[in-house]
Length: 143
Image (tube, rainbow, N blue to C red; front, side, top):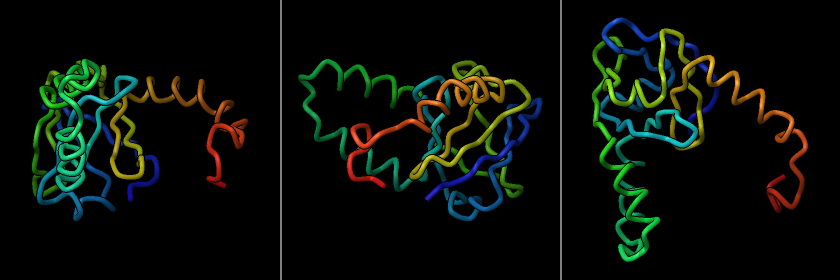
């Protein structure tokens, strides 16, 4: 499970330090791909495999499934962190997420998300009121 908020910086070569507490879990490989709201999803290989199996069983006749799968898999990049725990974010993904030097890496349960720091701050500002007002109808039986 991935938790927390971390604030690494992107270097001039497009590399980013993974949060230290997750480096061991991701040391043997991970998959980066486009995420919703213009962030980058970071999946451990096993979780990406699980998602692949779910999408494999989805009906190929459903246009939404085809559209999502095409973008999701076409933008995916498998990476292995270097000895220092850095990953290189491909230029197309950096552009998609508008990553600048200051980034935010958030834990999102089964994945990490990489955000541009300003984009994350704006997103969080828009969502925190809705979060604090979430009712039973939104998340039935959760809490």
